[in-house]
Length: 217
Image (cartoon, rainbow, N blue to C red; front, side, top):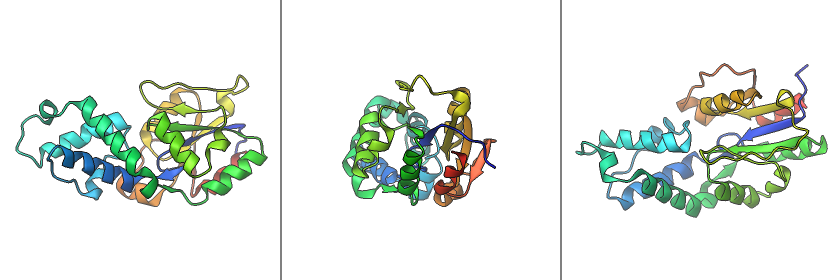
């Protein structure tokens, strides 16, 4: 029998929602603004497993291979590039982002079990909340929210115990962050992501699909 927990952190990208194609579109729109060549989707997929700050840095590094420039960072201010990327993502995200199959049913069943829920997202909080609201999923995370950026903040109920909290996601960098917080970590398989970004982190648990997480509560 699976170990029982009382709280669950869910990774946003790849676990709650599939946003790879919207990330590709937003990134290429940003490139076009600066007169740069578009990057193929499969190349973007290979770096999409990183947190957004590192993701953008790696995309800039990859672009240097396509352009006759010695230092792309000298031509584009990172902060401006990142802002443009997020602005483009926010503009198009609701047209291309999809909720992962089975997540809606999982959230409903977890609510019936009175499981406390949080979101771990490297997206800005306003974009994360907007997408959750679009799918009528924001109600499941009432008063319990985590944003995984440098300016992150965490709002946990006093009753939340690290030993009773499970993190479920699909990216190694997420697992590392959550393991540091003292949470058990569970790999949720995502065929599209796993094809391009094989996981190397040794997780405590692994499940084939989101619905399987219910057995932990």
